[in-house]
Amino acid sequence: MLRPGLYEQVINKELSDELDESQQLIDKRNIDKAEAPQILSGYLSEIIEKGLSCLSSDDIEGQLGLANRIVSAVTELTGDDEFDGMSVDERAQQLLAVANMQNNADTMKRRITMTRPETSLASSSLFTGAGHEPQMMTELKKEIVSADRIDMLVSLIKRV
Image (cartoon, rainbow, N blue to C red; front, side, top):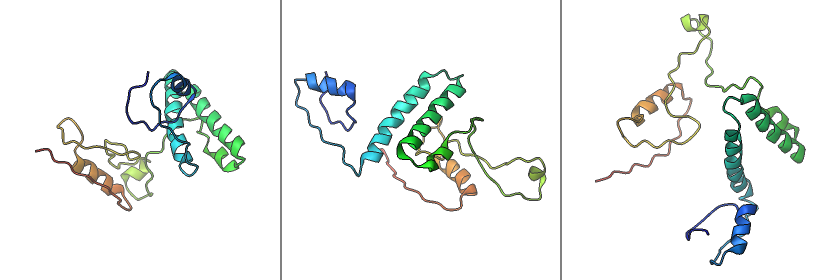
């Protein structure tokens, strides 16, 4: 039985069966065509993450295989070969930084010495000011050093 409340989730087969058998009042609507890519990609993201997690964490080849099968399916179904180049490389690496070659010791050793923030650059972060968590000012300083531009959305909430 579903708990009463507001929902915004894709109705999958399992949920559809539960709704069909429910004696509760149900409010649902068709997925808007303009919003479908965002709604369905969010839903698929959860499924793909769960599927990758089900594979052994030691089995990076299996995880790459699953990721690349998904990319291949997208390529095949859309007929757009641009997606084919988006398959994950078999070396399973993540790009962290790129720097210009300069005449210094780091260049001679072929290494990059940029200080990385503790929080991910690829996702939003919530800074609470707790002592055991990264501090916003420290993270901003680290990010600004390597930035070519800065776009920021900040919401400050103060508890009294």
